[in-house]
Image: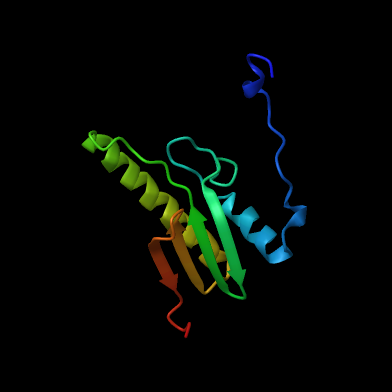
Length: 119
């Protein structure tokens, strides 16, 4: 490995291995942008996992940790996280899903939205 090889474009996996319903959700999640970087959350690597079951979606996010000593940094990170989660739910609701759950990488439920008619 050369000195600057880490800067080269890394090959990305393709979506062709994914089931069609998961592939569709991944494409919808590309509409969600990180407000700090303006990159979509899929290409930025924030989507850690995804489960699609009929009209229900579960999304796992890999969220960066902030410096515990910097309260201002924590406040910014919390606002960014809330915005991303809100946008995920909005995009998937518009796509027609009736239940959306968003978790962090360790499985902690961050937010849940369910259509009022969802049983």
